[in-house]
Length: 196
Image 1 (cartoon, one colour):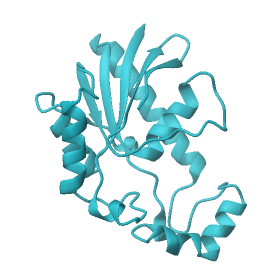
Image 2: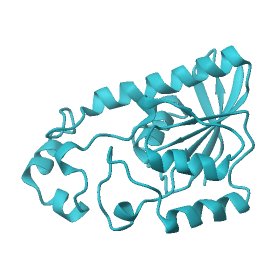
Image 3: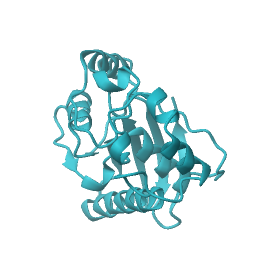
């Protein structure tokens, strides 16, 4: 079966706009974030869909309601953002100068951040959530869906399923961006149809 899935990053929050790592912290979309999503929606950046799936975090649920007000979002907990642990809420400059973060980056992120999530567990969580969504689309015989989630989740899904696969491809996912892909459920391969 072939399905079309649009991966949409939530609108920004005030913390993110100030350069803070947000991760699992649950904050509302900001007025600026909402304005950007509405502007992109008016410019037809988001395709029509049959189903909408969302991270449990409020910024994603609010983004889903803005873009698809007539389709109730199905909440998928495993679509939540990467958990930065003790670094959440801190400025990028604070994190980059922290020796614990530098050591984590030096080890190529093979371990969990203090109080946070292991990157490999996170990747497995994202891939599992995506597969769950595809199974639900198949069971409901729906061929178009949107996933409203976070930059880290979108990059992980694109990296895992899109061809050509390259660990060096620098996926750029800004707030409100939408990547639409055609996904073959038999081969588990996605081809990008639209990228921002």
